[in-house]
Image (cartoon, rainbow, N blue to C red; front, side, top):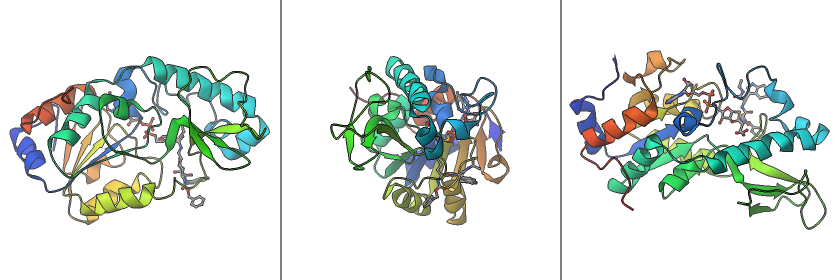
Length: 252
Ligand code: BJW
């Protein structure tokens, strides 16, 4: 079933579900002005992602990779959470048993007021020492001369997950458990092309969950879901949260 406007029936499903999983991708931040990865105008358009988002690329040319991530940090710092981030935060705060899982590294769900976000692909806002493996939070807009260095002298890297790297310890296990136990899943703004994140809706479907895709474009997951809400997340999610009887915005 495909529509733009969430039905009252779906609102009832959302308010009545025992456990809800919200899985987000880059599309949830598109209306905050942050580019997605794939498709026209995406970050990877005309670029080979393996030259920017692999450990091999970073080891070969840390300054070029850091320029890309320093720019991404400045874009994310200048962006504000949009109505989709806020609706997810409102949902998480309004009813029990909502797991929020994201592939995004921009921190906008947290800034919208989400209390707990499972970060599958890490974050732009932590730096990791390439020698010691230690991580520290780093919210500075300015990194100084690139590449930034640890007090031990080694190069720091962004604590994001590049292709071929394992996900942060525990994050996938928690997300997988959330998918297994969910009875309603909202898959928002992801192309579903990157594993293992793309397996989560399949795990939920196998467990009998009702899966709803929120995305203006069809994806490989589209034929498999029970319902598609075809439009921008910033318009659809506030309507959906409201149809479930919850406020559209998190309480201040
Ligand atoms: C809207 C909207 C609006 C627009 N509202 N919607 C061969 C070699 C090496 C690896 C592999 C290989 N083959 C397979 C792999 C595995 C690989 C993989 O999946 N590759 C595929 C691409 C083929 N996966 C991995 O490598 C993962 N690790 C792994 O498998 O580890 C195994 C392991 C175990 C033990 C030891 C060692 C290894 C890691 C994957 C890491 C992905 N990293 C990135 C970069 C993160 C840092 C950064 O941000 O720079 O993560 S890649 C990029 O893709 C980023 C995203 O999180 C991820 C997913 O993208 P997303 O979010 O779906 O965005 P888009 O752009 O694709 O889609 C946006 C959607 O939004 C579209 O559908 C729009 O329509 C929609 N949209 N506006 C709602 N307003």
